[in-house]
Length: 178
Image 1: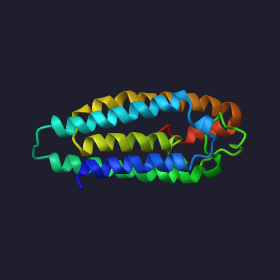
Image 2: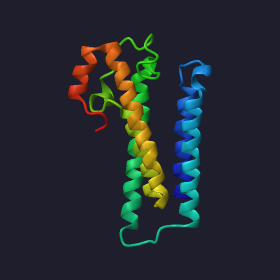
Image 3: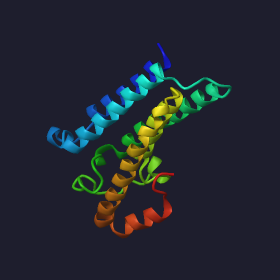
């Protein structure tokens, strides 16, 4: 099994895990924004794979180090995503939107060092993937990182409305991503 196959399989596994452990109703899960984001993520993934196979970057003395660094970032993102989702447990949902079940601000586990460990995890996962396979299409991940940043800022507004001072104090102590 090739590195590209293994890493792609890991992304598929984490996406399936996300869907299977989703606590929201089906109609909430399958909204247009989510479908659009997942479709764009899948398209970028396919383009990165094709670019790595058919238009690979030239190999140099640092190629192995680059690949190993990418795998490390990818694995860190994979583990962080699962850890953060597990910590959120029954509070899972769009922060500030599903506030009926989010009656407590989650600040433990990975939320103790990042206010948005899940976004951070997916940024690490996708950038790590691109670095590991040495795809020059890593630049296509930049808009996704910007999207995650904007989503995090929007969620922060909702959390500040719901949790007030508690959230504002948390925001002062813990960075947005890292």
